[in-house]
Length: 303
Image (cartoon, rainbow, N blue to C red; front, side, top):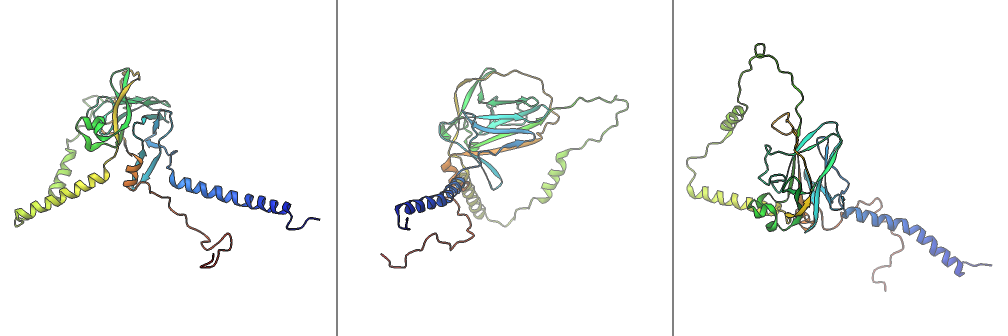
């Protein structure tokens, strides 16, 4: 007859305890991992066009949402690409910038620059700054000083990716000139200028020169501190040559202004922690039974 102290029962108890504890431990480990990882599956959309920041293996980089901004985490010397996916039946033109530099002509980003045209339900990768119709200089994360923008003297815009989407103009049937109603000319900027002139406060005549200088210095220091706290620790290099063939096509924009604009901030893990985008330790989950103990704890001063 088997008794409760038989080795068989001891082994059975051990197996039962393991079976009971393993799911809890696995769940705890999973929650801990989720607290540290980013939302790598999150998609960025500008209109009906999806934008992904992917590595050389087409894997989306970790990304975060913090205080109304989207952030992407990169690593030094990591090659990355911008994947464009059109989910609609229309064509769009995308003017894109990295660190404030246009990805096609390398100039300062502007809506008037030409962009990439994405066809209906099509997708492609933008692998770097365009060198010609057949080559690009690969995107690689690097130090701010070694970045393309840094070398061109525009380091204040390092750490940001911009995408401006333009829709295509539909076919228009022009009304003959003799029956077209005359439209009054109106300066769209006039109202804003008048509002600015009315809202602008008049500086006091009795404010001394020294106080103005002191105030300006304080504002300058605050701007410098804000710039240092938001500055990215990595930039994008004008990297090695890669084959990437394109063709020129005709695209007439429906408007001179983009339909939508997407802005993505990027930084290293250390930089994102410094900015508070990701925390240094996982946030504790609220407990439904905070006083629950698995086993009887020893009393104080127990040895």
